[in-house]
Image (cartoon, rainbow, N blue to C red; front, top):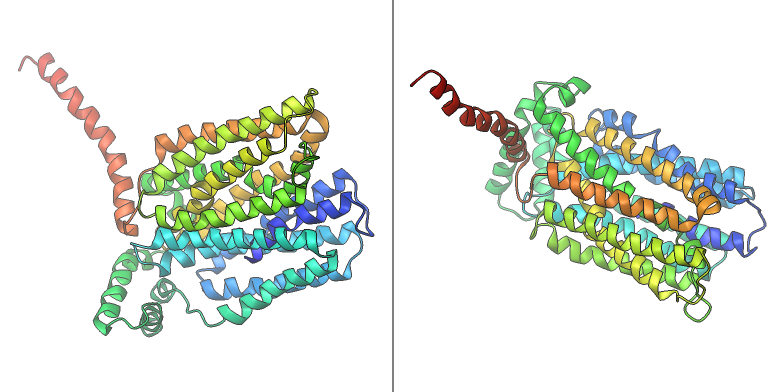
Length: 456
């Protein structure tokens, strides 16, 4: 939710800047840099914390983001220039990098196999809750009041999450059986002692091979299985960002301001409705993800997002060439449909796959590299959105996003296996089977030819 407030915060702030509601002034270029600095900050933290997560633990890394967010919002209260907001966004971006690197690992390790997908979707659900929070409050209160409301979120985080346990996987990797047992017992609540013991033995069995090796780049890329798992996650990460959702969220109010809203709702009201749609979809996703599986939802999400973004691009192209009475409900329906479909697949399932596809000794490093992939593409998208809008029209952005989603559909169809309801070991075995099947099939096809040539 802290990360969600950062992602949604620019939308009402940009609206206040354009309406003259702030004492500070900023050009379109400065505004684009202010928004994009979030992703530049996101580059700073994934790799270091991908290592620290196995040194100091998952919980301390997550808790650190609370004080950092508090400092960032206090900086907003003390600033009256756009330059200070650059540093605020840089710091908040570093916090998001920590969260997106560590939280999927933590969730994947504490959740049971049957609910791991559903629980991972609530990571995205709380992100959406933070976005909805600032979308609804931002247009109704002043700039300073919005900052105070945003400051409440990290305070609530520290007040509640100080009591959560460390991941039992971390304790097993550190060879601390006593604390691992305590963590499993806490997570299982009132479960019988033998249930706790069986779960701990399962965790130790899966981590036994990982304990013998220290996670490194060689471990991550040293086998065909791990390289394919890494490739799959990077494809889904690229699909997530190429959908343009991060940019749509940041520029929501200004995007709807380009539509014909004279006889309909205001851009701020459309933005609030968009936030409600995104948040409510989370509850549907939590049910579907472990019922239908990851692969069908991701394929549906990529294709649906691409179709509706192309429709949005066509609407804004018509506006750009001079059609004036197209109505604001067309882009809202298309963007709203895109956001709902994104929230069913691409949004929540990337953290799920990050926690599922890698062995525990390299999970932190893999998540860190994935966060860097997300950050680099997001930074380019956020920075270039306003440039493309000013130079060639807002419709070009949506044509790019729609095309990216359709290309991602083809790649995911080609490479992604199903991981629903499987343990980490089973997923790794399934990846190995897909690699081993190709040569065995080719050998089988060649045998008759060899037999005939030898006269048998």
